[in-house]
Image 1: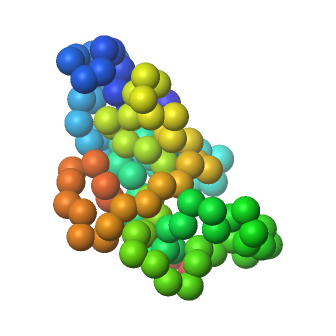
Image 2: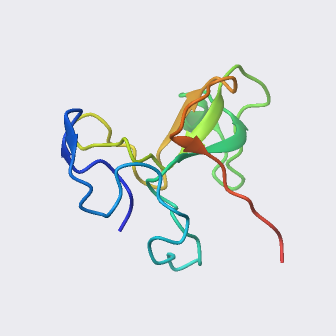
Length: 114
Protein backbone atom coordinates (compact mmCIF):
# COMPACT_ATOMS: atom_id res chain seq x y z
CA UNK A 1 0.00 0.00 0.00
CA UNK A 2 1.13 3.52 -0.73
CA UNK A 3 -0.44 6.93 -1.06
CA UNK A 4 -0.73 7.77 -4.78
CA UNK A 5 -3.43 9.30 -6.99
CA UNK A 6 -6.37 6.95 -7.55
CA UNK A 7 -9.00 7.90 -10.03
CA UNK A 8 -9.06 10.07 -13.15
CA UNK A 9 -6.07 12.43 -13.15
CA UNK A 10 -6.22 15.37 -12.67
CA UNK A 11 -9.98 15.67 -12.29
CA UNK A 12 -10.76 13.32 -9.40
CA UNK A 13 -8.68 11.50 -6.78
CA UNK A 14 -10.99 8.85 -5.36
CA UNK A 15 -8.84 8.47 -2.25
CA UNK A 16 -9.27 4.69 -2.28
CA UNK A 17 -6.21 4.43 -0.02
CA UNK A 18 -7.95 6.75 2.46
CA UNK A 19 -6.13 9.94 1.45
CA UNK A 20 -6.32 12.65 -1.21
CA UNK A 21 -3.37 14.59 0.18
CA UNK A 22 -0.32 13.84 2.35
CA UNK A 23 -0.97 10.92 4.71
CA UNK A 24 0.41 10.64 8.25
CA UNK A 25 3.70 8.72 8.27
CA UNK A 26 2.30 5.61 9.96
CA UNK A 27 -0.84 5.29 7.81
CA UNK A 28 0.43 2.12 6.11
CA UNK A 29 2.47 -0.79 7.42
CA UNK A 30 6.26 -0.42 7.23
CA UNK A 31 8.24 -2.32 4.60
CA UNK A 32 10.63 -5.19 5.39
CA UNK A 33 13.29 -2.70 6.52
CA UNK A 34 10.91 -0.97 8.94
CA UNK A 35 10.55 2.14 6.76
CA UNK A 36 7.20 3.88 6.41
CA UNK A 37 6.06 5.47 3.13
CA UNK A 38 9.17 4.51 1.16
CA UNK A 39 7.05 4.94 -1.99
CA UNK A 40 4.33 7.51 -2.60
CA UNK A 41 3.05 10.16 -0.18
CA UNK A 42 5.83 12.73 -0.79
CA UNK A 43 8.92 12.75 -2.97
CA UNK A 44 11.98 12.49 -0.74
CA UNK A 45 14.78 15.02 -1.07
CA UNK A 46 18.23 13.42 -1.15
CA UNK A 47 21.63 15.01 -0.60
CA UNK A 48 22.92 13.86 -4.01
CA UNK A 49 23.10 16.19 -6.96
CA UNK A 50 21.05 15.00 -9.94
CA UNK A 51 22.36 14.20 -13.40
CA UNK A 52 20.21 11.92 -15.59
CA UNK A 53 23.27 10.26 -17.18
CA UNK A 54 25.46 9.96 -14.06
CA UNK A 55 24.58 6.36 -13.10
CA UNK A 56 25.40 5.04 -16.57
CA UNK A 57 29.09 5.50 -15.74
CA UNK A 58 29.06 5.73 -11.92
CA UNK A 59 30.02 2.87 -9.65
CA UNK A 60 27.25 0.65 -8.32
CA UNK A 61 29.22 -0.17 -5.17
CA UNK A 62 28.67 3.27 -3.63
CA UNK A 63 26.05 4.90 -5.87
CA UNK A 64 26.37 8.55 -4.86
CA UNK A 65 25.52 11.35 -7.24
CA UNK A 66 27.91 13.66 -9.07
CA UNK A 67 30.13 15.95 -6.97
CA UNK A 68 28.26 19.12 -8.02
CA UNK A 69 25.22 20.31 -9.92
CA UNK A 70 22.15 22.52 -9.88
CA UNK A 71 19.36 20.05 -9.07
CA UNK A 72 19.07 17.65 -6.13
CA UNK A 73 17.75 14.08 -6.30
CA UNK A 74 14.17 13.26 -5.33
CA UNK A 75 13.03 9.65 -4.95
CA UNK A 76 9.89 7.59 -4.44
CA UNK A 77 6.98 9.52 -5.96
CA UNK A 78 4.14 11.33 -4.23
CA UNK A 79 0.38 11.37 -3.67
CA UNK A 80 0.12 13.17 -7.03
CA UNK A 81 1.65 10.26 -9.00
CA UNK A 82 -0.75 8.47 -11.35
CA UNK A 83 -0.11 5.71 -13.88
CA UNK A 84 -1.26 7.96 -16.74
CA UNK A 85 1.81 10.20 -16.51
CA UNK A 86 4.05 9.25 -13.58
CA UNK A 87 5.85 5.91 -13.66
CA UNK A 88 8.25 6.97 -10.90
CA UNK A 89 6.45 5.80 -7.76
CA UNK A 90 8.99 3.10 -6.95
CA UNK A 91 12.10 2.99 -4.77
CA UNK A 92 14.57 3.02 -7.65
CA UNK A 93 12.97 6.04 -9.32
CA UNK A 94 14.97 9.24 -9.17
CA UNK A 95 14.40 12.63 -10.65
CA UNK A 96 15.81 16.06 -9.94
CA UNK A 97 14.58 19.50 -9.12
CA UNK A 98 15.99 22.75 -7.83
CA UNK A 99 16.43 22.94 -4.05
CA UNK A 100 14.48 26.22 -4.00
CA UNK A 101 11.33 24.37 -5.09
CA UNK A 102 8.47 24.72 -2.64
CA UNK A 103 5.50 22.37 -2.87
CA UNK A 104 3.38 20.16 -0.63
CA UNK A 105 4.37 16.89 -2.27
CA UNK A 106 8.13 16.98 -1.54
CA UNK A 107 9.42 15.94 1.87
CA UNK A 108 12.44 14.31 3.44
CA UNK A 109 13.25 11.29 5.58
CA UNK A 110 14.98 11.61 8.92
CA UNK A 111 17.59 8.88 9.31
CA UNK A 112 19.75 7.88 12.21
CA UNK A 113 22.48 5.32 12.59
CA UNK A 114 21.87 2.81 15.36
